[in-house]
Length: 248
Image (cartoon, rainbow, N blue to C red; front, side, top):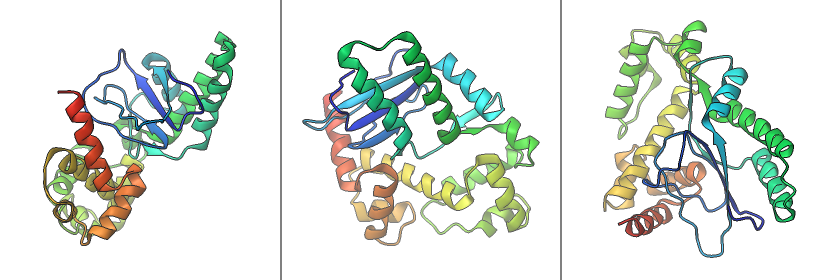
């Protein structure tokens, strides 16, 4: 852990030792990385990154209490401007040089951090969704598959509702109960995720990537991509390739 007024904070609710494959990039702000997600961190020269790792059993217990459910999953985005996490990181940063990080102090911060992450970056899973009238599991699979197959196109709520034989109104309400995201936000985040994969794994021009994930103009794509990842598509691709070259 490096502490010198961190410019980037990474929070890892982790089930064990870090996994060093995959890509995760963030120059400023807060990154929340789900358990067992393959990752690596790419620092720019002169940057300072503080890593806060939460033990999985402790985090799971806190998340269950905060969400009232035994089943839960992380939701996007995980790159964010989060003032509370930054305050926790600043508190650790202030105390670390003086070696005053007592167990009681760390336990209090861990409880606060775990509860905050659970409430803001985690959604209750199928048990909660079903109890509040969400979509059945097989209908959610149908909707997710349809979205994945049509990311390059305009996807309307009416189309999704028709796939599971519901009215648009009832579909939108039940979808949000199941995912804690509106259909529009879910589709948008899926477009961003697919764009990340294309930028990191292909040489396709950015204009082509934008079209492949359903954006009509490169300018609109760039603005939305930057809003949800903290990077422009060009910078993300460059960072991905630099990180990949270092791991091979």
